[in-house]
Amino acid sequence: MDTIHGRIALVSGGSRGIGAASCLALARAGCDVAIGYNRSQTQAQALAEQIRQLGRRAVAIQADMAQTSAAQTLVSATESELGPVDVLLNNAGINPIYPIDDIDITRWNETLQINLMASFALSQCVIPGMQERGWGRLIMMSSVAAQLGGVIGPHYAASKAGQLGLMRSYARLLAGTGITPMQSHRH
Image (cartoon, rainbow, N blue to C red; front, side, top):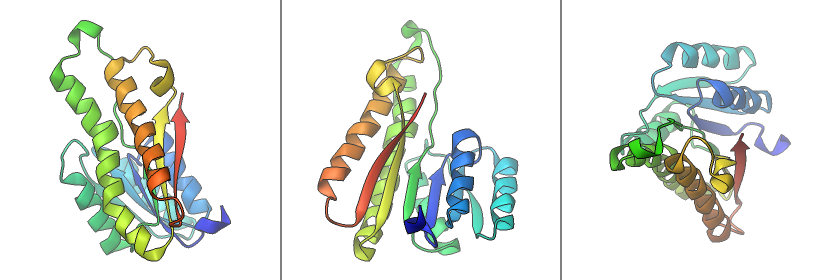
C-alpha cells in the first residue's frame, strides 16, 4: 500500500460499514479521503474528523447516487477540496430485498442506477485525469451475488455482475496506462 501514500481517494458510500472501514484504511495508508454519503451526514462528518486525527485531510460530500448528476458533483467537490482523484472506490449501493413478484421496472432501475450506473459515471469522471497523470486505481465493491445470485434478488445480482463486467472492461481498455482496475467482494 506504499504506492498510495500521498494520494487522494474518493469513496462513494463511504460514511458507514464497509465504506467507512475502507476510508479509514485508505487514510492509514496515507491517502487524503473524500467521503461520499447520501443521508448519513453525522457519520460522514465524524469519520472525516477521525481521518484528520490520523494526520490526513478529509472531506464529507453529500451526493445522492440515484441522481445522474451526482457523479460529477462528487468528483468536482473532491477536486475542489482535496485535488485530483487518484483512487476511486465505488462502494455506493443498495440491496433492497423484495419478493420476486414485487420486483418491477422501477425497483430494477433504482438498483441498477445506484449500484452500477453510478460506478460507471464516477469512473468516467476520474479516468481522464488518471490518464493524464499516468496513475490511478479504480475499485469496484461487488458481491458474491454477481456469480451466485442470492437471496436479495435478480436486480441486485445483475447490478453487481454488471460491476464485474465494467471492471474487467476497464482492465482491458486501460492496460498499460498506469490505471489499475480492481474488484472486491461483499459477502
